[in-house]
Image (cartoon, rainbow, N blue to C red; front, side, top):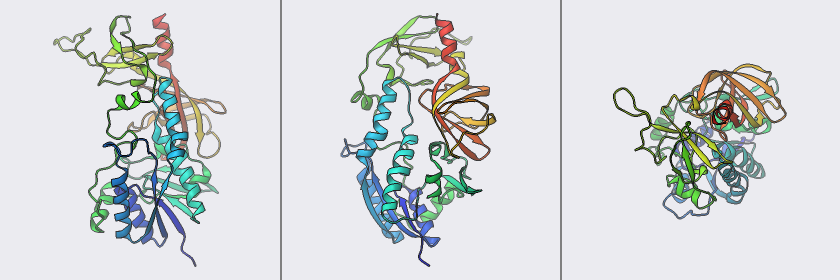
Length: 375
């Protein structure tokens, strides 16, 4: 009987490298595929594509598998980066990792792998797939600190049916241990902390090259002007650093200290940025949100009721009620107010370890509160 052929995305990082080794150990015919997704300034100090390719080739040589490179830069720019810019221009804060997974890693890459004769694809994501009653469920990884199901919530049944996640039941510490034991050249390589096209570069400087912007007033909830913003696109709700008003102290504590400033609201029509003092300020708290562009992994929405959700990746699961569900939208009512619910980010719904899907946050109850206050 012929071995199943698996094409695995290899980034040059330790997770995908160990995944490839595990698949070969399990008896699969493994082919590595290195994706090049960005070209605009590939020779800059901020993009590590060349070094990552060298690492991926070196790993493939140690494991004993073939590897090839494929260029998805055009698809990435059209399907991911263009949407990324549109969202920022509209004053929202998108999560390009979510869109990249749905449009590149599990669409363009999956299509390419199938043309190579693959039976399925694999990635180094920390997540699990379970087949149940003829359908497929996306589950959290056993290593809760590394679980990446949040970023995979836009996948569908076909994509899950053709995907393996070798690290889903393994702890990250074990992955590093395996990499060292089998002599991988990247065993101690730092995990990637961003997308190649952003990398570690100054983010505001990067956006500056692509977005139009206009300076405007920075105000407190009382309407006091405390500074000038450099363009609403360059700020995100809950932001503390880089606001540029650290020296202004409008409210002092009993000991003479002053609370930090946070971005709390963007008034797009009036080009005004609202800032507040204190992490627990009411303007940073939201009990309800509405999301658009919903995607349900089962192919249909879950029944309204009690679930858990995340409104940002590193957040713990928060109890909520799934309310009104439209064809492409839904609402969530949280048992406890959530901090800095940010339009453009993803609200992802869970039933225990099962990731049900989610959508893009359109608004929370904070803007409604704000309008009543600002009028």
